[in-house]
Image 1 (cartoon, rainbow, N blue to C red):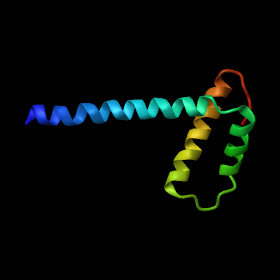
Image 2 (tube, rainbow, N blue to C red):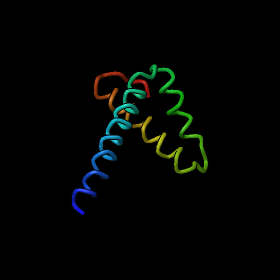
Image 3 (cartoon, helix red, strand yellow):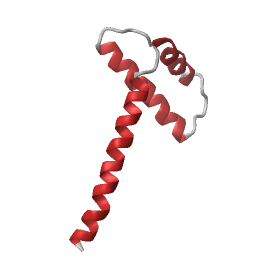
Image 4 (tube, rainbow, N blue to C red):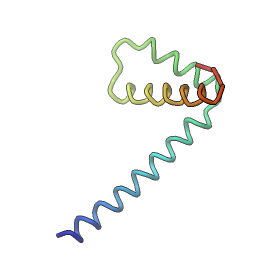
Length: 74
């Protein structure tokens, strides 16, 4: 049973890591003006869906990352 569980978990874990790293590069490569506009748009949504809440969290996280590097776009 351990080997079956291991063979099922490792591909899922690896796939998740690849997916998350790909998403991070998407945010990092986004131009400053586009990031600022999309982040500002998040504040105008009255009742966002769960997926949109996560997207807005990603925008906020990227704004904070850039701010820590001295780039104040959001």
